[in-house]
Image (cartoon, rainbow, N blue to C red; front, side):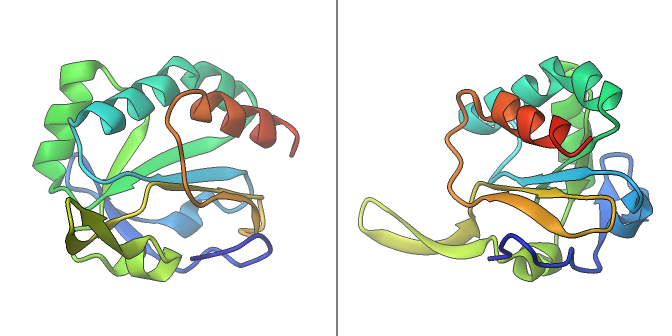
Length: 154
């Protein structure tokens, strides 16, 4: 997994509307990239709603927020619209970005192992350097903690 001090990988994602974009378009301003396992599941919904509640504060601090999962863009659009989410949701269907960030990991549930996305968040400065990494996110209070760390960059 990426660590503090690492450079943001060159990565291209697809937004919920099917439009491709490189993460590098955010160079020059702080960027939060958070990875979540699956749209419209309880933990992922709460996390997205928490980031949405703070969207105006992230904007005021000049910080962009991108949520990444391996869901198809159409599922992300449905998720965004269902909950009125005000953040950019991005699809990494082939998993290349998850691999680059180190969030595609082996997980286990009820004794069964499988590959999945580790819930993790990365805060990058304007030059694309990771200044804070949360490798094992607990949803409650996380968005507020990320906002405080992001404000400290300004």
